[in-house]
Image (cartoon, rainbow, N blue to C red; front, top):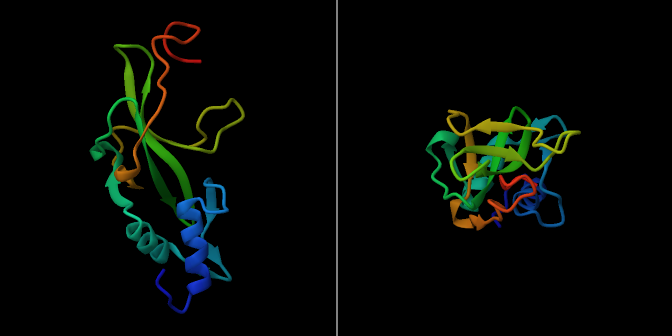
Length: 141
């Protein structure tokens, strides 16, 4: 860890990025009247999170890569992945881990979005896309 005048904040930001003792979800990165977006971006880059528009992110079907979306003073954790509806129908998106009342992603960015997220493709993991075995035959549980 690099120490600076804001070393306590740096440690907190690292915990958010790494999910170390802190749930990865939505976090306000303003503290004591100071906004820490630039420091958060520096810490993301240290941990191999790279800024990329969603449309440029190359991820295989059946994998998901962790990514943070920064919206003002809020950082929102989620994943870039392919949502598979059937063997012929799918879409790439970034979806937050925070869910809405229906259980869907509360925040999403479509696969053709020019919005920038900070994605770590080195941490891409296989995910169970569940098709074609879902209860409706489309892989959607």
